[in-house]
Image (cartoon, rainbow, N blue to C red; front, top):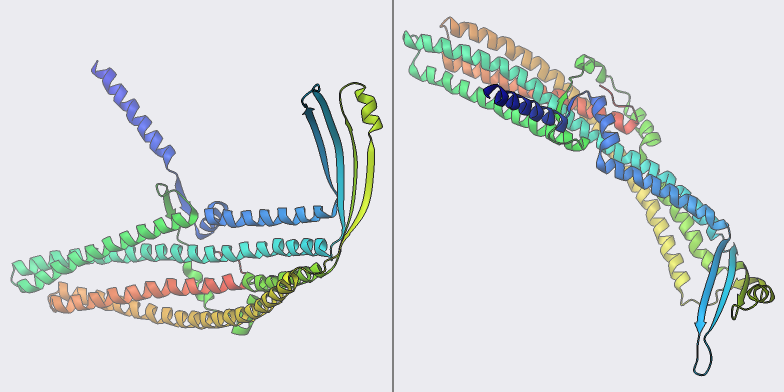
Length: 432
């Protein structure tokens, strides 16, 4: 009986573990993997891409407006009045109509929808750039947390050794109790720093999953890229080259130009309301008054009609005039918006370019600084172990090293982020 119960428990545990594995997935992603996954799964990005499909459908439908429309009608009626017998009657017909001329509105509508369809592609690219920058920032923040953790783990091992050494020195009266308590406090603070960095890493991983539209329960581990090429990132094209490339590729500027082109066509369509509309229409129909000689009635009542109609606008309470004025104002606004957008983009690119230069210089400086403090800290540790310096001297150098280390890691990934953002502006594929 015990064997049966034990076997049932083992089987149930295996099923639970299997269900948990099926419920959550395990991912090991590089930056390229994150971007590719996001472009295929991010909910907002998929919604933006659906707009492209909608604009494509609107464009295709507008082209169909050149074709005639066809409608069929059929009715059957029961007629009855006092003193007469009930009788049936019916009518059947086909109606066709086609707009021959509408001031060019059909052609303009087709052209306008074509422009909107093309513009939607750049709007998707615009959102893709925004999503890329968000993923870059979060991904690099996680990388910074991971790198900081490695250094902090090395520091806490040193703190632990210092605490053990201090305890021995205090036991033999080589250091004061206050020095030993400082070592103990430093060790506790180092453990707290590790915990804070782990929480920051986990929160940023959760934010990265959200950008990927990945379930929070899935296990996501990011793979560190080779940052040895960071020196190559410091080789920048000139600011004029960056501006020229940005002007050619940045979707924001393309969108502004499309707004102008669409507004120009809207103005044409508003003016078209002053012009007459010419339509061609035709119909064929028949009917019956009862069901006797049904076929003969249909043939005898067969009728055809074809006609041409012209609708000439004379006075519409100045609606066309007002609409034309509004369209002209919208065009002027689109032109001013484009000019302002060009100025904003130029200012943003130049400012970010200068930020990249500054960030690279800061990275080089902090790298030298943390190397110097790292070696100084090693020397002070050896001196403390030999009993030649106090715990205060040692901890001061340790805190200097930790501060320099934090500055170095922050400046390193800040530079990479800003450098890659320039690549986004220039339309360069983002890889690491």
